Length: 317
Image (cartoon, rainbow, N blue to C red):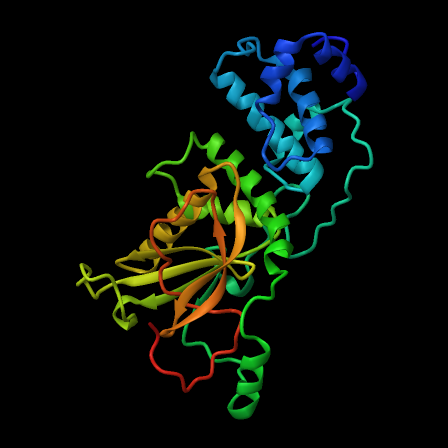
């Protein structure tokens, strides 16, 4: 697309090439604003000449790579995501000359992602990159009347919680989509937890894993007689993402991560308040969902961040 130098030129160029305009429009993301798509569209068109095998209307590995790089560039410009330095240098060169009106300003912290795209050391010497919690933790919990008052005040997620959480998970959706494309697509041989962890941390948050021995869980499916092993529940920003079973904590975490990534296979993800079982009772929980209808209920919750847990409660279910 030689000679195009600004957004107005792009619009005029596409108005003169309706077939190209229709083809390029098919790559717009479900959650992209007009401003974001206009900039990413210009990135794609400007760099098509650098990928000679990219032809309108034809799928190719070169097209997949160009689209992946366009998403990486957009994530960096609009969301502040960081990537390995070689990738950052490449998208900087490819995006040179594209003017974004009033671009957002992103700040980094000591606990977030550094400007070079490297992860800061996890807290407490945890090399796995997740906050690992046990259901039996009882630190800083009120007791007696204080616990009862707290339970009344914190009986579940507030009604506005899904709307407040949705922007973060829109960013995470884009990060996961690019990561899966660069990995060759979703499949059984991926390191699902590493993909999830790196994407969450690129959005400056942390994955929370809760582990419970399988033998301590009541109400398992009738066909499950195996009592050895562990169950892992994954959350991010209090939102439930997936549950997995395994012979040990590592296997359970891997399965939970795989279940969490399955949600990102659709056109969008949505945070909703849903009913789940927790300690033998129905509670409202924040859950990340795709657009597909569910044919079965959710696994019992292993943790419940919206209510303090008095220590004298009965066994978990």
